Length: 158
Image (cartoon, rainbow, N blue to C red; front, side, top):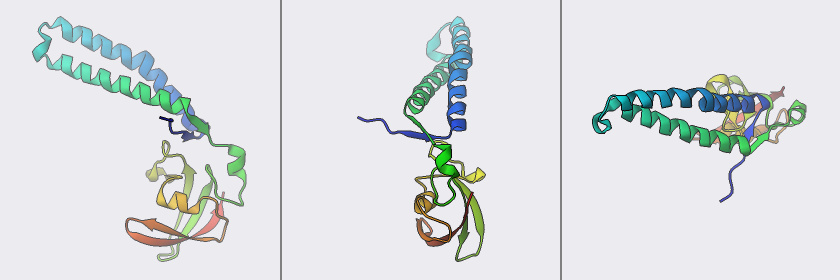
């Protein structure tokens, strides 16, 4: 089975690498120490400290595998492509206007790994992100959302 590419900014890749390093060097050691202490208490069959530490160890090892997978399949968003302000692309910051309400919002288009709607970083796979990709300023796009179809006008590409 082919692995899915992970679309990231250079900053996003750096954050994943830092998290991976922390898990490998710090968190693994902390959990190993917790396991050692829990085992010293004796009978592990009814030892909640041991069970908690084993659960955390499993989580950390799973996250390490996940991060390694994302880093190994990372595709870095080309900053020069996002600097072109004529077409919305990955890495672009876009001002859109909701034609129904007149509200304007600014979004940065990123890969799903870095998406954070609370920071106006939307995924290229989200309804709005997918609808505006490849379009130019003054284009009106239809966005299919769970709330129904919305119309947005692309006001500016930064």
